[in-house]
Length: 116
Image (cartoon, rainbow, N blue to C red; front, side, top):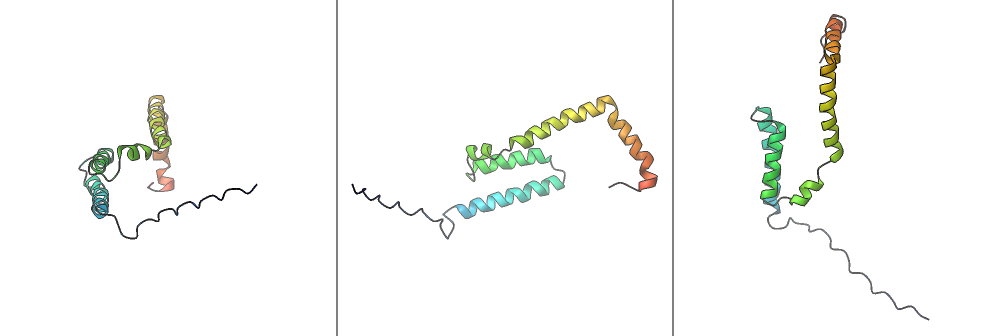
């Protein structure tokens, strides 16, 4: 028996060639917040963590991204690596290994020259 012909699927909408209304303003807010975070961090006005969090709240507040998009952008592996490094640093400090390595590098400095 003949198969009924499937109706062709509608073409997928192509992205608009021109920015949608309000997009330009959001682009300016996003770019401005990036520049502000970097500039304020360089001036010592706050830590990069605090300034970045403030910028993220601003971007969600003005509608540049949703809360869901903000949470999806968090890279959990990076956060886990950072958290693990705190534990490793504390262990190196408490065991005395960091002091030993520092003293060794200080003794090697005349041979190696100043370390960057």
